[in-house]
Length: 401
Ligand code: AMP
Image (tube, protein in one colour):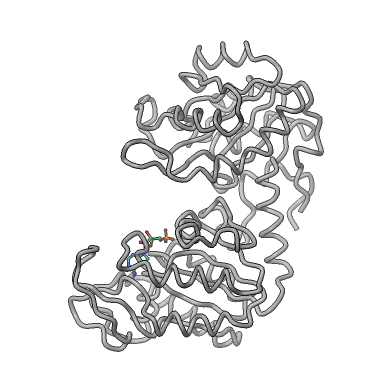
């Protein structure tokens, strides 16, 4: 798989459009709480600034109602953060492809940076609309995609737009290239034992990735809400814990496949249960065999943490996606925080995927100890499923292999 990268094409002095992923978390006051995705795009932006480009940045942010310019979804706060990181004025357009954006794009000087408004203010973005993509493409001579977290979506700025540029004027930015290379390398030739730690709320979102991973890994550790579907499939009482009834058969098949492939499959042996989904709820630590009716499991227990640490002991590659419990609430965060510490302490190559999982690693203070923290949750899962992401497909110079 050969991906065209920004270094393979000539950008000097040109009008360069960079699709970024600035979909960052904000608090209730509109403050950015985690700017990792913004920082991750800086090397590509700086590279273009240093080459006297006229730079047009674009991103989506959450899910505004198309056509409604609701301030809540504006990229204004992102422009300010970019300004403080780049130490450079960032010009903010009031719209996406409207008069203001057009005029500001036309007036750009070399080394200047323009940020368009939230791409999803325009209905054409999520519809992969040709006319919208053409309007975006008219702003630039060169198209760069550095939005790994959005590459699994066939949206206009990711897919249709790239097709307006020939192979000499479209490429992946440094972040996208790094993410794709990392996953590709790890999945192709992992150093063994290769352990995959999967958590989070839903089996459904990760089912395909799990099935694919079984062919590649030596051990699978399951935690989080998704563990209860597997526990129920084994016949355990799980009370009011999260379960996907329609996936019980799939869960059984996954466990059978793991056995057939001699993949060691670990489930929690104890859980933290509560009567309600609340930080104030009364809790109990119980073996998974003893979850009472009416209670729900919201974190893995200390025995599971110890067991999972043992399983991680000899790991040489660890891929982690999904928290072990409802880590947002202090009472149910211990399992996830401990898991983060254990993974960080291994001598393995460690890859953390998904916004929530990266957030756990950050809260645990372990980010610097991890080999690689991916900026994309959905995108990294689709890579694990063995798919070629639409945003990558349009930048390949050779067929995927
Ligand atoms: P996902 O998006 O599938 O990776 O899921 C992440 C979410 O799973 C987080 O918001 C956690 O709070 C949630 N989660 C983890 N464990 C549980 C659990 N036992 N019950 C309910 N939600 C959970």
